[in-house]
Amino acid sequence: MNLIQQECVKRGITRICHFTQSRNLAHIFDDPLGLCSKRTLQQHDMPHNPTDPDRYDGRDELICCSIEYPNTYYFAKVREQDHLFKDWVVLMIDPSYLWHPETCFCPCNAARSRGAYIKKGINGFLSLYAATSPGINFSRPDGHLPAAPTDIQAEVLLKDPIPHDSIIGIAVHTEEQAHREICRLKLQGITLDKLIYIAPDFFNKAHLSCLIQRGVRAPETIYGNGGPHGR
Image 1 (cartoon, rainbow, N blue to C red):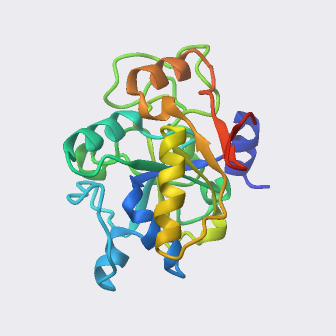
Image 2 (cartoon, rainbow, N blue to C red):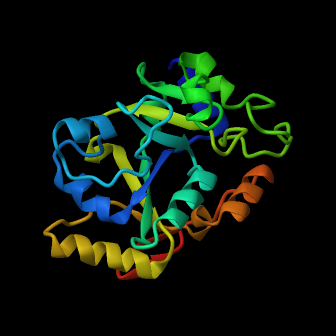
């Protein structure tokens, strides 16, 4: 067990999160590669709807993610910008990618200073959990959720592709959305074999941030067997 893996176990980290418009689910689960970076998608002329077309971090060969919960501030921003497509999902990815040698870490939004804070290795990982983080005006509270980085905008950048088997769940806003996503994929001949979580707090910027700083995990309910049930 390497140092990053040890830290993940100690902090109770269970997943990596990546948010995307739900219309991308068909592309992701119908393609044998799975989840790919913006650069790969463009190079192979593959259909995609980029969340961040600008990529000011300069690392469009990597997939932007976060630890345990979505970067709720940027998530809220991109949802507000698109007035046509309103359904978004959060893909939950196996945490083992955190100790992959090509994974990069940034203690703040990766676009800050054009990617100047992006690092690899244990020092990069630990920078996410420092008492203070670049660009924020408060210190990590004593009760802060151990699994969550100090800055909720901290990012993890993963080397692609992320195969289907490494996507361990999908979070949606409501039970109704879960039903819509399943039906949409079925209409395209795709059967979804992933757990779907109803996680409304993932879509509530202020509330999720408050929960994390208080050390409280956001409630999640597994959707299945025709309806939701407690996990």
